[in-house]
Length: 326
Image (cartoon, rainbow, N blue to C red; front, side):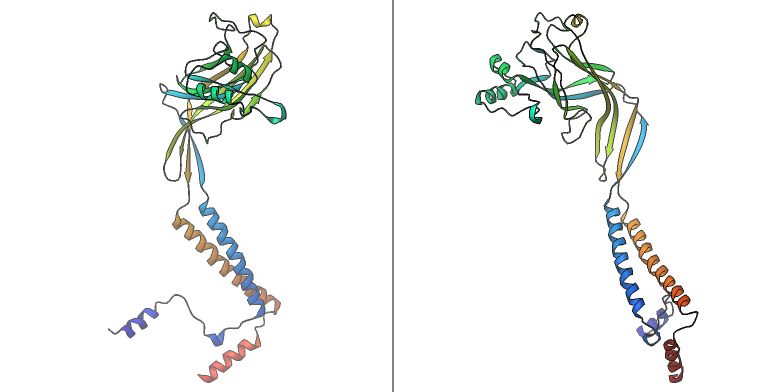
């Protein structure tokens, strides 16, 4: 079988009928409508591309079976109280770094400019003993660190020695001030770019005897991105309360900052997905093809109504000339 005969047989399968140029009737209205349709289809195409690039997020709530698991707690905060060794009562997992704290002019805690202060901050960051006089002069203390705890309801307290805990030392009442700024409070592995409810929050007080309480409900969370990378972390919701009391009331009230947290028996799985490329092509083809067909049909209907059902004489003339030539 020759190539020409094969081409003729294949042409018989053509499902797309062609119209001879002599039988086509072009009009200014049709050209204008074609331009409008091209602009609309271009906008729809860009919209579909943007939708294809967008990541859709789905949420699933599951029962948390990892009850016996330990969890890491991360804390970074600045307290408006000097931190020589006898001031704050903290676990050994935290570092006490001298800092400055200023609320005025929206400065929450400033950068140290004095070379002596900078030297003491570096020593404290390395875990070395700092000069108490310099630390007292800076006036604030940065509490920084992480520790592991059992995954059960518990409390984290930041208090002054001699207030709530009998350690043999007693902090002077005139020094007590638990005004603070929380830079980071999170559960699980530390991810600096994750935003938590308490991050960058500040609480102030003018009272020497004041307690701040935070009540947190923690939910284990698994995040799976579009590349199937898994991130294990925790989310939490928080409510807070605070109160001031007198020196006499301090006999049965403890000034300080108290974090009380509990873990919910459920977990959340967040999955990030993008529609498949084949789905994108099907949607795009449907939009373009459907728009062309519908607009063409609407144009013929409108033209039929406007002409009162009469076809264009020029078209009949073209058909008549074609028949004569045959």
